[in-house]
Image (cartoon, rainbow, N blue to C red):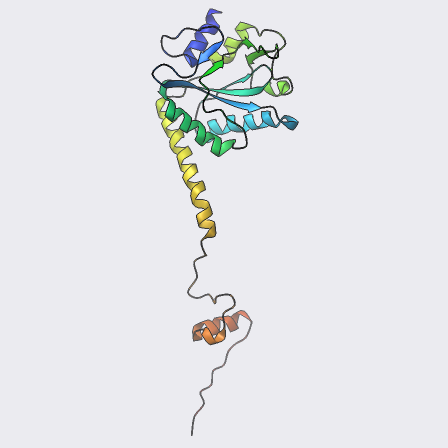
Length: 237
């Protein structure tokens, strides 16, 4: 138990905070956040597991963050747990989650107002199943039940956590900047798509009437049709 408690405190608790049952305060009295939790609710054909994998991979490969912990809630959803080395203001935590949500899992519902959560391992009172941290390579096997029938071994829970590291201030700042960049790019894309294409000065506009065309445009138009124009001057008497 001491090893598991140490790992939970190292990753998810505020400095000086003690475990108080299963519930974890995500926001402290000063309005700071150290743990970000993302839910992936049960969906058809194990899409919730596929979506979690996509987001977990994006966090690491696209945003440069360390691997998050993976858990089952005891019957409702999968969860990703992101540990911050230094707490951040709640408003910044919500902004980060909102940008993540927009970029990677917009079709998944998200609770931005959650301030407490049951910390694994703990028993889900509604289902009787156990919430637990799981090996990411084996998590798909729990896609149906999303929980364990028996309390998980504490040594195994500690082992899943000991290999994880917290997000440093620099890593968080870089990831936040990348997410803001993605949002800005997405906002500019519709405007770019609706703007008329730049017209080449040497290209004959579609549907151009010859009476409106310059001599150069007429020549280009005839060349495009495979016609070599011949111009003759008429001498007037």
